[in-house]
Length: 107
Length: 150
Image (cartoon, rainbow over all chains, first blue to last red; front, top):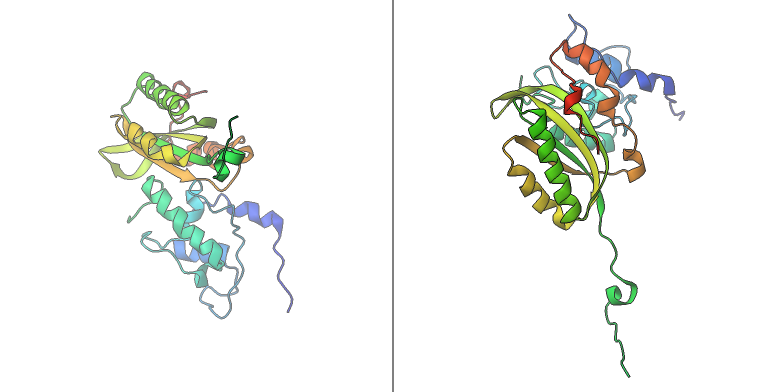
């Protein structure tokens, strides 16, 4: 089994994500986070370009991409392509940023 | 002839310091003046150094940021960030001291995973501050009179 290598240049692009009008949040984050040919493919878990150190409460824009449109729920690791360790950290940091008022609880 | 009996490890080798590195975030209300904010921050830090024997590594001001929801009637708040080394037994006293002030909306202590050398640099929020100011289109205000330098 060959392991996939991640380009270190692409990691810096995801740190500051800009929202695009006309495209929903779910479609955007699926295209950026989990690279796949089709948006609705759930056959295999693709590795995302998000690392452990990038997930902080001080980076709310990255955390918003991992939430649904109304920011009610956190997307599962199946959609995000994140490991278990990072998914647990995402849950913790979203709770902290919500308490500080940087992210909505419900829009 | 005196004899010293040391039964405990702390008597033999001395007490070890239990200090840990914490991140402190304080949020002030929108209508607070810079004078009152600086006055309260000096009182907090003097309390921490005298009573809690804490050492502060860095202080940052993240500006007057808009909030996603109202907190006690405020739609914006001043964010201050401190990284300090303190004994965990004194964290509760320090938090009660901060909560007693009227201008403080919320505060948060976080146990950091990184060392003190990591906190000597600018945080992620401060490095992205210029980008955030352009995105918020005037809602995010960075007034230098509110800067608090140690």
